[in-house]
Each structure stands twice: as structure tokens, then as C-alpha cells.
Image (cartoon, rainbow, N blue to C red; front, side, top):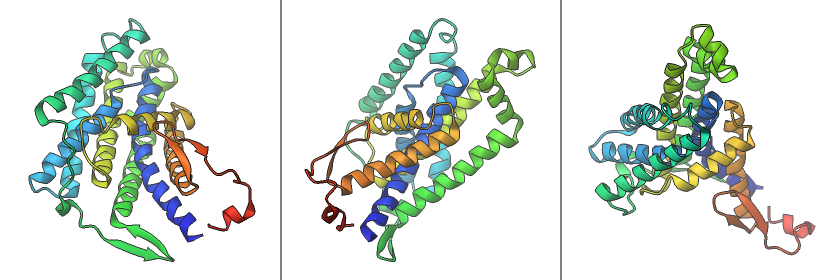
Length: 284
């Protein structure tokens, strides 16, 4: 049972990162009905910006704020350059443009910073472990869960308690009707990219602290988060959060059950010929 709880905690921590990324996917899709395939690389940019700030001596919160603001502005630029002009033309044109932005961000980082794997300095978070009922809890887990919880609360407040959030929901429901009611659709779309990219930056920093930073780091988390968004019902923010957490827990439990993990989709294939043998489950 302790092992089960340990894996659930690990899955909850990892799933929280997926949830933050999935929120960006689902917000943008809900507004413009398109998938932002450059979203995964915004994660990578956020991690690099946070790493740079950390190497300059900033603490966790300043690094997080700097990364979120930088990527929020980047998200607005991506919307303005890659989406706004081609959005009325066709979905294929917007998709092609987004893929181009994704490749540009990846290779521009490789060109200027190299492809070496980098890590956050230990000063950003002195690693500590705690034991509760036999379950090992690290301060990284607490950091991920706490940061995700705060950001989700702020996001829910923005969506449901502000005029901007009301405009976002109106455009998501019916963009033409919202425009007739006086809502600036282009501004609302830009704000959506602003918020979604800020969430991606936070996820990128948390992922970088837990693992490492490199130019292609956003590919797999971005793909998994996209699946989480679809799993939760793309276009639904609560669904994207739930989908991310469920995917993270599925991965963690799958590893414990000695299953082969298929990268990028969270699919699991069982290697044990007797999965339904009661003796198998006594290991829990």
C-alpha cells in the first residue's frame, strides 16, 4: 500500500506539470479552434529563461515571474506573427505556420545555446525529503503541487471573475456574436495566448527543476499534455487539468506494474502473463 501511495504521489506531481501545459492547449483551442503546436517549445523557452535567471542569482519566485512574463510576451508575438494573418485563410495555413514557429524556436536555441543538457543550480531549491506514513515526499513534489495549485486558482479567478475572462468565454462560445456585442476578438485571442504561454513557462521551469533543460525538452511533455487535453475534453479547462493529472498517475502506476511505457502517449502494455493472479497484487 505504501508503494501504491508513493506512485500516486509521483503521478500527481508529474501530472500537475502536464495539467499546466494542457491548460494552454485547451484555452487556445477553445478560442480559435486550432492547436498551437508551438506550445511545447514555449515550455522550453520558459525553462531556459528561468535557468538564466537562476544562474544570475535570482530565487525561485523571481525566476518564475521572469519566465512567465517573457513567455507570455512571446505567446502574444506568436499569435500576432504566426496566427492572426493566416487564421482567416485556412486551418492548414495556421497549422503550418505554428510548426514553423516550433522549429524556429528549437533551432535558434540550439544555435545560440548549444544542445547540451543543463540543470538548475542547487541553490534554486535545496533538496529535502520528508517521510509521512512510509511515503517519501520531496520538496520538489511540494513545490510542483503548491505552484500548480496557486496558478490554477489564479487562472480560475481570471476566467470566471474578471471581464477579460467573460470575454474569453464569450469568444469561445460564439466569436461572431461576441464581436457584435462589442468584444474585441483579436485582443481576447492575444490575452488567451498571453495566459496560456505564461502557464507553459511555469510548467517548463518546474519540469526543468525536476529533470533537466535542453532545446528539445518541450516535445514529449507537450505531446503528452496535448493528449491530456484531448482526454479531458479539449476546450474545457477543468477537463484539461483532470486529464493531465490522470495521465501522470497512469504513467506512474504503469511503471510500478512493470509495464512498458510507450513515449508520448501514456499507453501501457503489460509484460506480466498473469496480471489477474491475486498473488501479483500482494506486492502492493
